Amino acid sequence: MRAERRDRGHLIRAVYTRYAGADPDELARLVDEAAGDILLRRVKPAAIRRVREHREAGHRTVLLTGAVEVLTRPLAPLFDEIVATRLAVGGDGRCTGRLVSAPLVGDARAAWLSHYAGRVGANLSVSWGYADSQSDLPMLRAVGNPVAVNPDLPLYRVARRSGWPIEEWPSTRGEPRAVTASRAERQAHAVAARVRAWRGGEPVGTGTGSDRARTVWPGAQR
Image: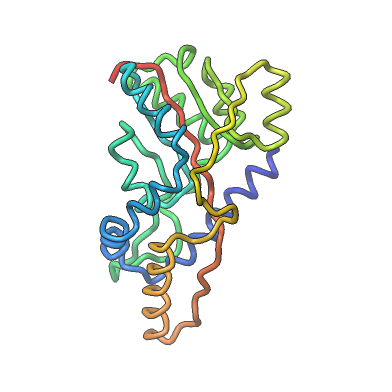
């Protein structure tokens, strides 16, 4: 399991090297103007309904994800806090392709959650956590109401043994089965490629891949 968490962190770092040379303001504009609806359509309806149910119950809602921060902007109205991957920006105002800090995966997510709960006064023993990967077992074990959603096989087995709820959240109609870069990502990569070409750098491939979001809802009043 430790190797899987380590590999996930390496994957996140590798994916976001593609943003080297991109303008952060341009990325934000692309998401706000062109990609917001596309990104929201990729979110399972059951996930949005569950978040809204928690908010209606007065719960504080938090999203923990390996997705790059700018791509979570359309989800901001649903959450009290979003913790996402932050891209480092160089002295020229462009993304460097590196991250501000190490990706929040595995034990790091559980540690962050514990610290956050202490800061806002949340009681984790009556909180909910949702995840789909065994890499999030430390986070799920930190809350009183863990839920495995569309789990991978290792998480499914742990959830069955532990008596945790296992839920299947269906995809939206027409959602592609293969994970591909969003339109905003493709446009951003094209911008980065043009900048690097102008600087005499090597071409940048668009590539594919993402880290699916993990959500946790501490049961504290907002």
